[in-house]
Amino acid sequence: MLDEVIKDIQRALFESDVNARLVKKLTENIKKTCKLDEIPSGVNKKKLIQKTIFDELIKMVDPGTEPWKPIKGKVNIVMFVGLQGSGKTTTCTKLAFYYQRKGFKVCLVCTDTFRAGAFDQLKQNATRAKIPFYGSYSETDPVQLAIDGVDKFKSEGFDLIIVDTSGRHKQEAELFAEMKQISDVVQPTNSIFVMDGTIGQAADGQAKAFKSTVDIGSIIITKMDGHAKGGGAISAVAATGSNIMYITFYLPKFNLLFSFIGTGEHIHDLEPFTPKSFIGKMMGMGDISGLIETVKDLNLDQNKNLMENLEKGKFTLRDMREQFQTIQSIGPLSKVMQMMPGIPPEMAQMGDKEGTKKIKTFMCIIDSMTEKELDSDGKLFIQQPTRIHRIAKGSGGTVMDIEEMLKQHKMFAEMVKNLGGAKGMLNQQGKGR
Ligand code: GDP
Image (cartoon, rainbow, N blue to C red):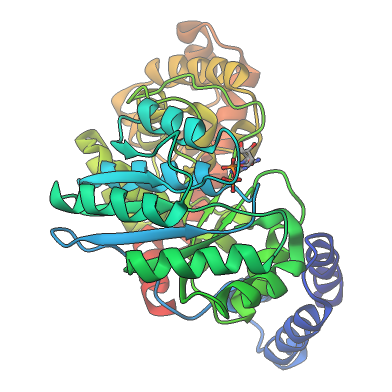
């Protein structure tokens, strides 16, 4: 059993372009820890294998350092560096938006005079997200732009000044010289290196080259959507001991169905990188910590009961209904669904239209339930199948719809229970860091 599982994992890791040396080490560690012959009977072997693999995968992507965070009330100057096309400008706005949502007074400075249209792009993004920005069509000296922009925003009392710099197609001397000059005048609190995750293991060399020129404090890995090589990039960067701060992604066929702030698409797709939730999500456990953070940010008090239940390892049909309701209020649907525990992966992968329809059907079904049924774990439907027929009649759904929903609910309720509740998982996360 173990050999088969290991083979599957090895295949998946190679497909993600994870370095062969790292895969070998991981395999050895799993074999060392999981000595199945020596495990006393009564211990759940499958669970033990899962846990060992989970822990080993985390070790592989954990850089072992705390990510940098800006401090409110201080002037935090952040300089973004990276190659052209890595996603620097897009990510600047995402980070600005992320901290604006957390109550920081944030602004953007464009010093990219190399790429035509760079200022327009930043201006457009910033305007959409309602973030103050600075740049110029006539000034050609990036160092002067940096000085002027930072001075202006410093005097206006901004907490977080994000400076976007030019990229180049490759690691050229000219790029590094410009980066150093801007860094010298701006004296950033933190320099963030933005790297394209699709380069896979090659991320190792790029991270080292940038780190040796500017004092890089954090790394953001972009384009983690739909690209097989993301795991390779993360593990390669983690192996250099660099601090991975965020990962970014776009969702395929991404539509903004529900934009609760109306800022425009893609702006939400920035996610703090925590090894436990990254691997947990990869293994289909749902990102419970990400969910809690989003809910906290949005002050959705109606989710209090759900959070309490999750923490206790309990998940009722009423909780499932609450999840569906939250999805509808905080969209973009597909993004939220991917993050939410309790949403079946098949549904999270659906297009927004299809997913919305399914949620509506499931909600109608749940709404036809009695209070007792809502607070139950769903088992009473198996004991009394006539209840299913009653609900089918009441909700306009089919027996198959109801059975599907109950199956999905059962799957997640079991997972919540096995994990010892979200609290257990969050505690684990705290220890891991
Ligand atoms: P810059 O030259 O480093 O400033 O890069 P840009 O911010 O202009 O981004 C380059 C391209 O990558 C653009 O087409 C972006 O839309 C795209 N991009 C940025 N971030 C992501 C991401 O997380 N996922 C995907 N798929 N594309 C991205």
